[in-house]
Image 1 (cartoon, rainbow, N blue to C red):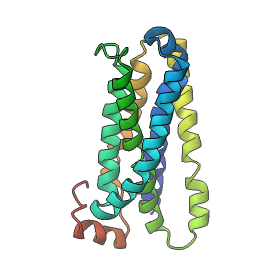
Image 2: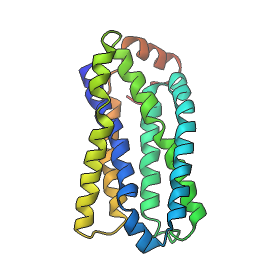
Image 3: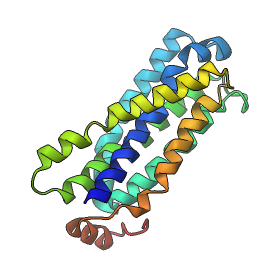
Image 4: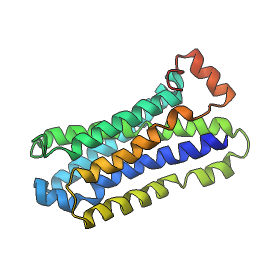
Length: 202
């Protein structure tokens, strides 16, 4: 249970790390890409709507396919979307607000896989004392925000290209992604995963 606790702690923290590339660099994006405050508001609204909607479906997918599988592919897609958004200037799409809005929507959906899947994995390991376990485990968003904000702020100080403000946090999530197959499943969850085709990752 300790291994599952630690790995899911940092895998979910990585979801918050990658969000800081966007939120911390808004001034840079406004200057370089010409994004207005109104458009930033649209981006944030779209992300939140898709994130909230995705939470419902991610939980169902985790029950059907297995939490590890959905978490793995959700993280992988989150990395792809984050890098695409960060490299918008290289792809010559930084002035196409519709494309950027679609990427924000995709980020909302892919990021929504983290919470339901990680919670399902951890809760099955702690049938007793869940309050104490989750009291510690739920600190991961703050840890992720701290790591992400520190990382991106440091990159900004060195005046690195905007794309790296997204690629480097995404790389952090990539490292955590490599640990997902190592997450041990509780006996009841392992049975569910194998019965429903969820044993494809690890």
